[in-house]
View 1: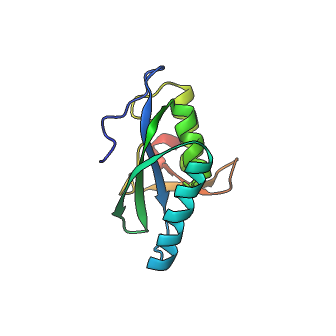
View 2: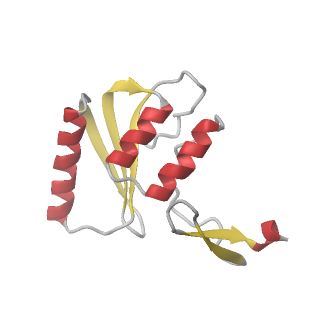
View 3: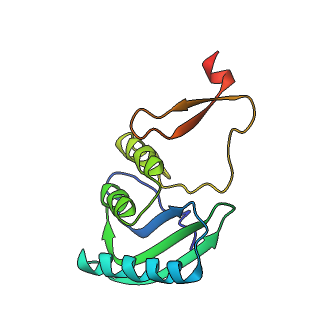
Length: 136
C-alpha cells in the first residue's frame, strides 16, 4: 500500500491516512504509538483495517487504512491529529486548497540539498530550503 493511486479531484473520497514520523523509535514506543492511534481513530468513529510502515533514514512513513471514506481536508486533519509532521500538514492544506493532484506525498529524499538558502517558516518556525535559482 503506497497510496500512489490517491488523488484529489474535489469529490474523491479516500481511505488511506499517511503519517511521517521523523524519529527512530524504540520498539516499545512504536507499539504504544500504534495502540494509541488505533484508540484515537476508534474514538473518532473510524475502523482501522491495517497499518503499513516503511523505514526511512530519519524514521518511518506510516500508512493507515480505514474502512470509512473521507475527503482530502478530513484526511489531512486526521494526519495532523495522529502526529504527522506539522510542516507537511500545512503544505498539504495549501495543496488541497489549490486542488493539486497527488497532494498527500511522502518524500524519502530531499529535493534541494545544494545551492539552497534556508528561511524560517512564518507559521511554524521550521527551516525551509529555497533553491538559489528561485531567489534570483
